[in-house]
Length: 190
Image 1 (cartoon, rainbow, N blue to C red):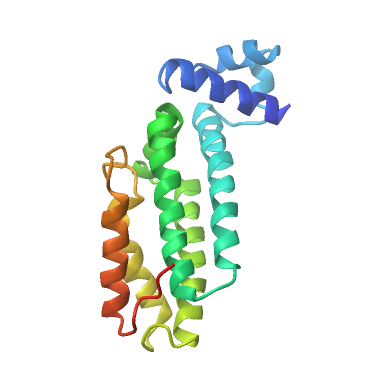
Image 2: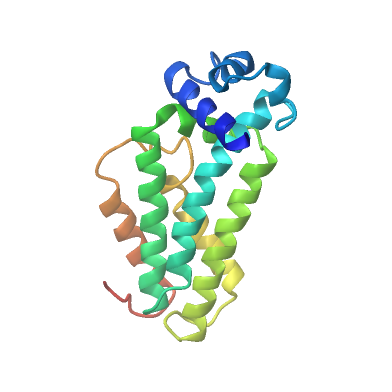
């Protein structure tokens, strides 16, 4: 039932936007009364958070494959950032209403949005740690380097950062090359 509710909510959010999607309409779409929705979600915000979380879970899974992948850590680091950027950009462009759910949750400091940020920073820290241990970047505190890289690239993966603009990927690649070069070791190219 929960999956059917999420599917119906996604369809209605895409069609009408967040503000005009009502719980009673989601219930009607699933064929239940709206009281049934409250067995699965506390309120409309909880339902919208769950819709966003489902998309983010798929994103985390794609990024995790890069973290655990083979090859030089700096190459995986660049792939990880490119995948994050492309996923955010593609969602922003092709599914703007659902991306807006995530953007609003991020702006409002919703718990799941903070958990998302913590989870992807943890993934990034694993790659940075591998790069430091392999000598691909200078010795340093992997957590400090992680924060530096994440914040320096925020314009390429944060909601509200102009993700719908074309042609930004080459800028991200150039920025990553500069940042990695600044960390003291040559940049490994793909």
